[in-house]
Image 1 (cartoon, rainbow, N blue to C red):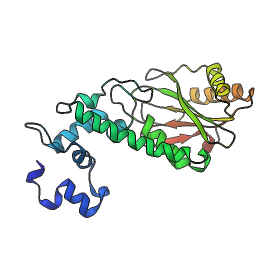
Image 2 (image 1 turned 90 degrees about the vertical axis):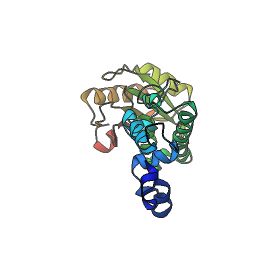
Image 3 (image 1 turned 30 degrees about the vertical axis):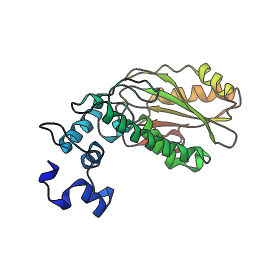
Image 4 (image 1 turned 135 degrees about the horizontal axis):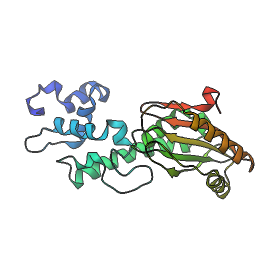
Length: 234
């Protein structure tokens, strides 16, 4: 129980005295949850939420169960932890969405190729920790500013069916000049597969026909984002 800890070791006091970076993950989350439940202290409750979500990566991805990048409204696995009612779930979802929007705003304000670090952080917040594979396209204008990021396809844990004609159709509809291809590996390992490389080439060739450049294909894992362009495999 927090009340049993020395004053200097309580999450709130520690944060104010030493900064947020001094807190463990459970301590940070405990500050948002504020109280535990009967028989379960707030630190233990925070640990249960992190375990159910797979850590902050899964929590920020909006998953660990349902929800996620396509905006579906199911209750994620962490939301089913005993002691998290609608009010607490709403607060956590609001905080997570603010984090995603803050990074999203940064990448919208300048060309994406000038904000690679922010792009990778944003993609990690959106996709890392999802239990299924999704394929997204970031459509860019002629100055490489983001027009839209769309989830084009959602697959199983091991396979995603991507149809080049649909990607081409959306690029034309949005008047895009270039794209960044993005997908996640639910395994958490961001190493590109042979299928990833083949898909990249098929999409690059298809989009070339309508004068749309593929600038990169980014693969999101747990804690890392691989760039095929940087690897020389685009």
